[in-house]
Image 1 (cartoon, one colour):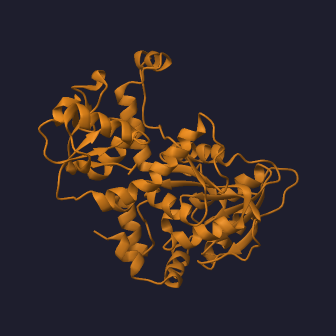
Image 2: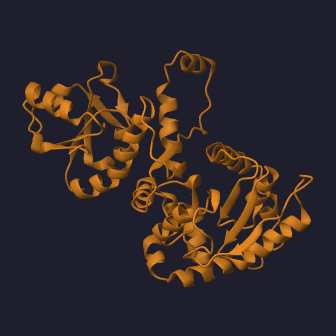
Length: 378
């Protein structure tokens, strides 16, 4: 099995660019490159679903200047032009851009008046554009191919307008292990990296981005009339929650912006969750020992995220909600708080923003010591 980290480290950025260009060699007549996103009955539904959510987050306006980053055969650039945008199509592969030019010759946009994109060969490190040039930067299934993500995010920040967005749709956190990814890395030497959203946000925030907005993913589930009625009543079935968890693990669709969050009752919580997400990776890799076992406090979104990364290290979950007791979250039983009385190990608080109250409760009611508690809040 090919280790994607070793693959990234084995070549310079320039060498990775050569492999990317070679990948597109001799593909001029591969019709699927011209037909995307309607290139296959099997894959088109997923592609269009992801594209729809990507465009929703992009919040495009006619006349927007858009950078289609790692544009490949430029099929998305064509859609953006149909929507009235001014587009720069950039890719590290000259061959890919040549295929993109052929796409516009063979199948030009339907719009009565349009300008073809500017086709720009990317050098792998920087853009030849002034600061604050673009209203939107669109990255569709491409950032997981990049060896130097922080460098590129810094450039994104520089060339993005202050009220603009970087919008991405990327595969999941275990992408490199898939059969297709292993095949691509083995046969073409291209990068098929795992996309860990916490890592990307950590890098993005370090170069200046102030906000991340993430779309939850649900595309695998099919429900019957009873489950539909339960959703209408606000009682989301457990099966649907599991699908949301699984689909979100397998796909990340989000946008980055330079703006500070404007605080109000709704987005103050969104800001706190951004902070929680950006600190999650650091917490888990500095405070959790993979040779030890822990209890999770709270059976919510944070617990699902921790379980997806450290499933074998979690013994069980405790939660105050009596309706959750005796149920399971990702195979882990949920108990009443009394369960921790005789536990000698450490407890991880999976919720954010309430650590002080929780620690006080655990200390006063259950005599659980603060030094045995791990939290993002301290």
